[in-house]
Image (tube, rainbow, N blue to C red):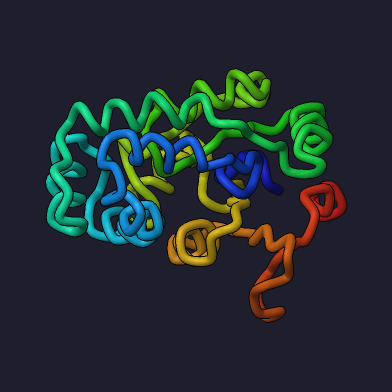
Length: 208
């Protein structure tokens, strides 16, 4: 029986408008930001796979090396601040599912790969924070490193936990490597039918 439901944030509970991020880097770097903005997801994915957590000094050095742009910790601070106020859209059924899980007495937490200041602000503005027993962020531990999943389990044994998220590597394969059940949120049906996946979050209510 599952008692601990661990959710990813971006693309699973909320989907953000990252144009605010692009505008920020245009303000900082001018036209040199065009290539960097295009490569942000790739750079962050590379960082997350090679580092155990987000640290401002390490991230600024990493991005300077990758992009050739003069990053520093002040620029990272500005980035963290601005994306905390991005426009977010709720994923369909998210509140219905959270209500259902909490009404049944389950523990619900979020494990997300970014800085706490940003993610907590977004979760507070959306109202989702009220459903969460805890929030685990990338400035402490990063997915797909096993330590992040163990942390998000809290005091619950792995067989009582389930992970729900939209990223195959970080939200589906990562937890399964530890023996944790996971469900891929694949609303656009992009991934193989061999994976355990759902197109709508409310299917969680049918499973659990």
